[in-house]
Structure formats: structure tokens, C-alpha cells
Amino acid sequence: MDNNFPTITRSNGKGNGVAAPRHELRRRWHRLPAGGHSPVWPVFWAALIILGMLLAFHQLVRGAVQQSESRHKAVAMRAEAAWRCNSLKGRDATGSCLLRINAEARRDAMLQAQYTQ
Image 1 (tube, rainbow, N blue to C red):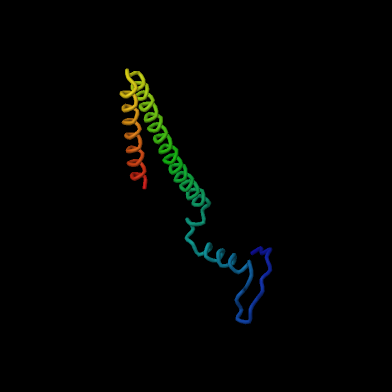
Image 2: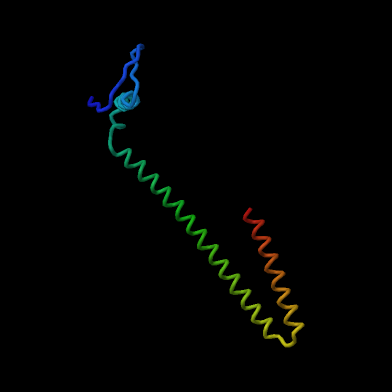
């Protein structure tokens, strides 16, 4: 074996330092069956981990897009309702209509906050 790291030997004969864990790892590697020595396994596990990370990222982006779409829809609906309220005749009718819209918006925000927690 080609060790580039120094090994300090204790009185009990066991090695110490960086080379000791590396030596143990190599010893376990050579005890594996012949199929376990194939360089395909690390590539397989790396590909599996990368695939899992990509799926997690996809779910995260998908959730953000859905949240953005629902927020955009809510803003558009509120703007349309406010436009309708402003087109009503009479200051009292417009004011009460806008108050109703704001109350509904607050109620929806509270429900959304409770749902996310």
C-alpha cells in the first residue's frame, strides 16, 4: 500500500493519525465481494442522490409557482372587485363595498396564515 501520511504506532501496536482510518477503510474495501469493488456502485449512488435532489428542487419550484399563481389570482380578483366598487354611484355605497372587500381580504389572509402553520 502506498501511504503518504505518517503513522504513529502506540505501545499496543495500533496505528494513530490520518493513515489509521484510511488503512481500516482499505481493509474493509478488500473484504467486500468482487462485485462490490466495481466503480459502478459509487456512480450509481451519486446518480441516485442527484436524482433525489433534482426531484426535491422540482417540488420546491412547483410549490413556489403555484403559490405565485394563487397570489396573482387573488390580487386580480381584488382589483376587479375594487373597480366594481368604485364604479358604484354614491359615496356610501362605494365605501361600504370597499370595506366589505377589505374585510374579506383580511379573513382570507388569516385563513391562509392558519393553513400554512
